[in-house]
Length: 290
Length: 290
Image (cartoon, rainbow over all chains, first blue to last red; front, side, top):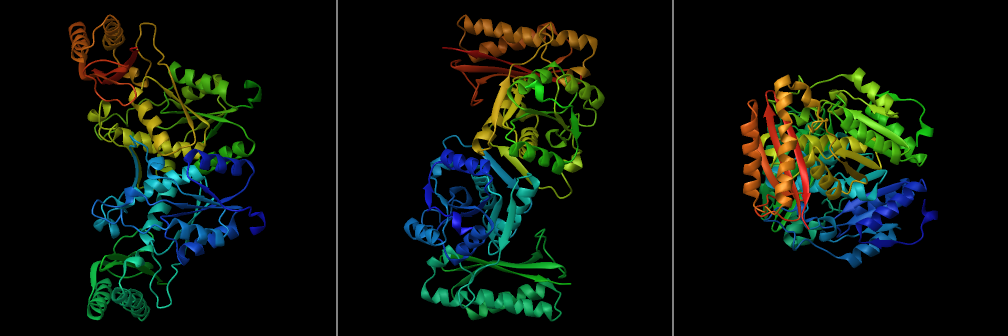
């Protein structure tokens, strides 16, 4: 729907963003929404392209959300490059960048939290207590401010996507959630803002993640049904082929409920989080068994 | 806006209620919303009248929300009388009664909760752990389903009103919250569905709550500024004049932040919860000091 593109606006105020989304509603225009923490890459661009195709107006939010970093994490040094992000957004003909300050989103005296219980303290949640509570809280706020018809998320953050879909369903939020495939570098490394932390050696070693996930898929499709063997195979491969890695977890879970699988069946999500130096990388692959 | 009244509909399905509110949105009609647990009385009627005056469409929800009862509380025996409620609603020319089942609101596998931290574990929250979390969760769901422009609440549930206003503000929910004065019986007892639990003697004694709150107001307006003295005066009065009462709490707090006051100043909320037999009654009064 490019013909409607009238240039890009950058909005920093919640009330002004709200007014624009209400105006769009009155004019019966559909809004597609891509929430990000900035430092945009081709993965984000793929979400923006899809949103442009399916909606009259595309809103991109850039907000490094303090509530989703645990106290020991990389909030302060998380990569920020608004000028570069603006350029990528302009190239994708984004209609509105919503770029609020932390004070605009969490004014003094802020008290409210949203949590999807059970799903938020497993996998990454075990290693990042409070992380997903921060994610669901900010995403619900952004949905209320932007009032989109469609919300676009990346499959790279698989647990986040499952949790947000569950929140939207449970709280009856009137938005359609679309999860798009992970976009990868040529050697298979999943695109991520945190790849910027990798040294040359770590970057070289990090390709093992996708290799291991692919090998695991082949094993499963060849008949392996024991989750322990798959996890062990991935772990051994990462450990034997890298020097800078430290594994947080490797798990086989049900792709919808995220419940751990002992015997593999149905829609399987193989998810992992592995540190390379200062970068905690996550990746995953879905395997569907008939 | 009575001229638009075309008879009352009773809706039990979330998706149908959603469709009706979306239709109203497209037709640019405003929706006023009064959420209740049924067993309606003149307090609810006053909210409905206000909503009828200020909106094109008035939606009344009747849902005894299991999540806001603690395990030891009166969920099973909470008074329910849908036929009587329907009659009161019809008399007030309510456009839509939304009357879903518990399974419709909390389908199997439901996981999400909304909490206003800090405000939910004081006053009544101290005695009813999880209660306000249940309230905020269901109210946010109902707001998403009904999409009202205005939400009407009673001042009798003062803490609930403060918490819901805070949730709406914090989560950027696009609704205006209106809190209306407590409606009372002729002798001053605040109207409440739980008054139905009172025996004749308890009912007689329960009038002491409003008497004590009024006496406290007089004391404060005459210059008393020590919160302890006010609380002590109310406690002594209730204890000396009743045989069936058991006090949960009597507190003087800031009317907006609900923070306890030692020296009284500003907008003061005197709030109390007192059992009479099987009925846990709450009441409050606001005193504004210049």
